[in-house]
Image (cartoon, rainbow, N blue to C red; front, side, top):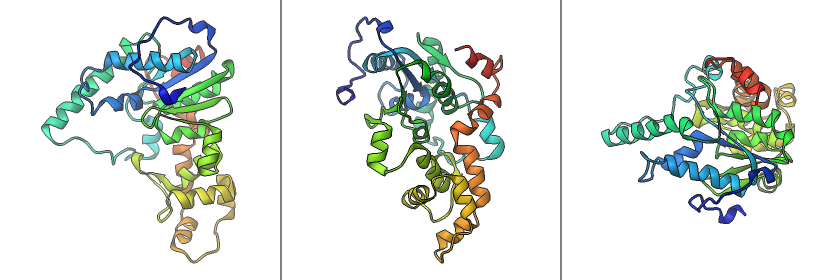
Length: 280
């Protein structure tokens, strides 16, 4: 189905009440695909068609679009330089492009007909986690639209991901086929290696392959922490044995299912975000 998906196809009138799936979008992530296009400053209508086409393709009875609103207050409190490595535009033309792109992005919530969630100091990842944990049981299947690897930990038998950049679907089955990992093991590997894109530093000398091997061996972070110190003369083993505090911190930054309520509670925008979400 999705291999031939085209976000520019004509969206015909559809009776979405006949469907029983939930579609949830990481709006900032999806929007970034327009940044290098000619319509970087006028992509509102194309974004709307994209959402409608995805809803049709995935037979969504309900669609919810989640936006970031600044950096996570929760994660910034633990890591002051959270996302500090992300490059800022320097050239005048690039600065202008970014400003015009974000001008459209900031107005998108008001332009959409679908349900929108956006709260200051809360990231879309935490909102998406809330929805999978609280709304997904009401629907036959939930589809998350994002290329964010951190969301892979949310995969379940009734929860899958569509990566709009690679045009690939990620499911429990494909994760097992590609990496021989469960969603929780994948999350554990991310805790060990860190996330450079968010400036979350992992254990030095441990990249994805070593991190995934450790996740397969120990299964949970608690098991790994109990096993420390691990015998071995390799430098990465020495670093791992000395990295207990890094692992504990990274788990609080990366483990969405365990800490999403803390992250949401730390945000502020009018009413208590958890009260608003509880009414969905």
